[in-house]
Image (cartoon, rainbow, N blue to C red):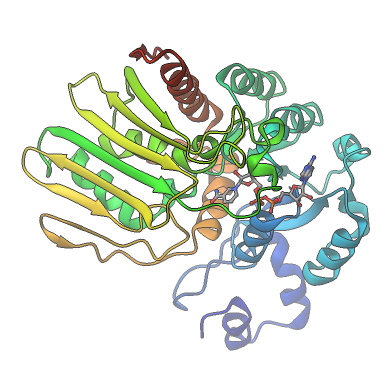
Length: 372
Ligand code: NAD
């Protein structure tokens, strides 16, 4: 008895009401005593119907406060497939040439940009210009300067800019943050973040500097960067970094294969992290404090996230990250809800400043200071 349809049928609600329900939205009927959701539903168009876009679209089928209603793609056959799969109206489908006319579509509130990294900047600027809220995948841009321009453009257009930091809504992660805030680890001393996988196809956009903006750091290392901030509760003020490259053919100039990097935080805490496209089994966070520790492994994969602290196993529920993220983003946009860890453009610019500093530290071999 978990689906919304079951819930409605049990209540004996008519077919007409069932048909209308998606517009008002209903509470996730995990238990039948929950009140139906009657707030606004965020009507989203996904731009970039690739691997991750597909995952988000599937997860959104279980959302209560958000709904997939539109598509932006350069591939007409994908649009047709998605239209029939998700019941998307023809008038809500766009390609990259005509999508600025989304401005005149009152049935779409937000565009979720899920294209290769280097396209995020231009696409978000166009979304803002069209007066729609922008949700953008990580990394929000390929450097802090572009990221700041996106923040400024969305501010100017009076639309929200949110970034797909799905871990900011993940229950075990949030429990570690709660424990830290309540002092259960004591003074935080050290964070370790290990993020990587062995990348396949050498022709994919992730290994093309023009489209990816870099290498493993842009794609997977950013989880260690962002994680070091939400796990310690501080932003790093200096970085040192070292790159190793075993395959300069696959990992060309400007496409990092493996980078180890170290942070110092204002409190004196330090971090040691690894970002790689050439090793598997790396998805682990470790946080150490004077009174205790937390370990998450896997820490940022699609789940289930697992972890323990000095007090024992973490037992918070397993969620579909993207479902929770989109429901929460709806509440952020419409109800001005403040998440425990921000997911706005300013948050993403901090990560981009750190990435800029890491690349500079690799290049110069020196300690680089970061200011925000
Ligand atoms: P993908 O290659 O599977 O999909 C990318 C899509 O963009 C494709 O549909 C492709 O056709 C389209 N596209 C539009 N313009 C393009 C161009 N000029 N060149 C190439 N493709 C173009 O990639 P993906 O894994 O879906 O990644 C997309 C974005 O999502 C990236 O920014 C990535 O970092 C992010 N992502 C986030 C997560 C997460 O957990 N938050 C996971 C995976 C990917």
